Length: 155
Image (cartoon, rainbow, N blue to C red; front, side):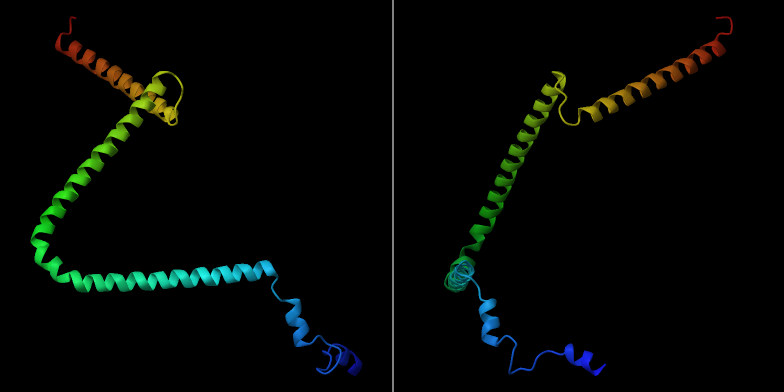
């Protein structure tokens, strides 16, 4: 039993096993991975530098132009409100125009019998409406016919 426990133990540090240098060489990155890592580091550094410059320029711009912004705000607020309403109205009109064009295109394809997407649901809803209208008409016709007989029994 003592022999089996010794056979499962790792070899002593001084002899036989792979050294630290050999393990590093086996797991060393190849040239493509090194180029990728270098590219990542360089582009990350450049982006970090640009982010810092942008933040610095923004803060300095706010510091220098804050008095001008505060003084001219009675002019900019109404102008901004008018521009916002104008742009929102224009974009809404464009959106409604696009929606109308899409709807007209779908209706044209439907009437031509080309079966656009959703036409099966439209046909089902139309048939349900027609069936309901016929049912109501039949019910109302029978109801009114019965009321007419009550009003004029000899008829």
